[in-house]
Image 1 (tube, rainbow, N blue to C red):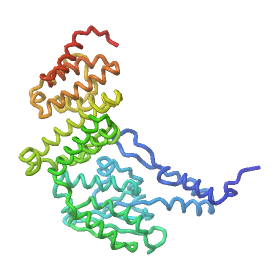
Image 2: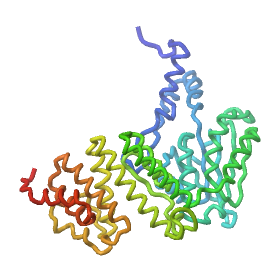
Image 3: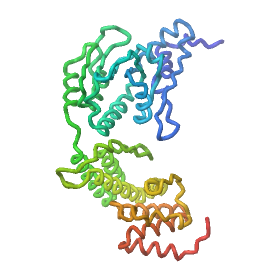
Image 4: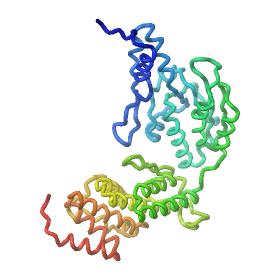
Amino acid sequence: MAFRFLDLPAEIRDQIYHDILSAETARRPPANDDEPGSYEFDLAILRANKQINHEAKKAFEDNIFIKITTPWAESIGHISSEGRVPIITTGPPAEDFHSFHLWVWIDAPGVPYRGVAYSMVICLDDLPAFTRMWRFSNLNHQGLNPHLRLKLTLQDPHVPDRKIDKALQIRLLHPFGDVKDLHSFSVEGAKLLPSVEEALKKEQATPDPSPEECLTRATTLKALGNQSLQAGEYAAALKHYINAFAAIHITVSGRMRYIHADGYYYRELTSGPYQGQRSDYVRLIIRVQLVANVIQVYLKMKEWDEARFWGKRSIVLFRCNLTGETDDDLGEDWSKWGWVENSTATHFLARSEMGKILYRTGLASLELGHRSEVRNLMRAAAIYLPQDQVVQAKAIALDALNWQRP
């Protein structure tokens, strides 16, 4: 007897529709850690017949979409690449899309509008990434937001004038608390609750932490991480270090570190424990210290691959800044390590911390059997840590070994 889909109970059909048409199902992971994910909605079931179309549309309508419109074509690429925000669709399909719960209109009053707009559609789950990217851009380019105008329009796309419940209003609007100091801002539609609007505007009026506050917070979290490390609480230590990165606008996601808001730190500090110092220099030193400490955590946890990855990535970036060389291979020929004694490198502000990174990366490489790079890592560490007897002894001992190539 042939199976008839419509003979299934309605609740089972509804679950199948949801499983097929939900944004969660449609989401695809990024090809690599440095790219945004994507969405691939399979809408073929909507073309099966009228009854299935009617039933399945309800499941698709459970997704919460946001339409973003600006007069600048390049904004779409910026949001996707810089913010790593997955975009569902752009171009004419986005222009014609009306099944959104929130319309985000961004423009600049001082710039003539030529009647051409560019739209994109994203999912609600990705809205915080969008507003966070906007916040970082404003910090990096001081004075950006005072030139911009933002208008938010709430709607129920399926039942006109129906009020959106408070929980959803909060999810749709509160991420925009990250967007501060705008030329003008308005929010309207769908029976907006005054309490939701008031909370949003209160958050927008709250200033971002100053560089002094960010650096002090990062230093406090780093100290907490050090305490946890000494107590053998390695997971807690790692969490404190990752939060310390976040305090100075560095996002850690898996093995990737994304550095934001550099421009925010280009000034002298006027208060706090680092008063009188350059903010960007202090941030750089804290960054290198945190990397060294994260490597130490992974060594204690015997996660050699992670320890080596964190160290090697920082060493390659350091070498790239000195020489422009981007090759991931550290090189087993010591003659290619001349950058270690480069005058810029030897006067590096975080010289001793870079020495710890070299040494600890060498320990991880030793455990993993990467003998071709261990000796050079230890030699380099000895140059950066001339007073550290443990490092000096290790470098001498490894130099004395007659290793065969593995």
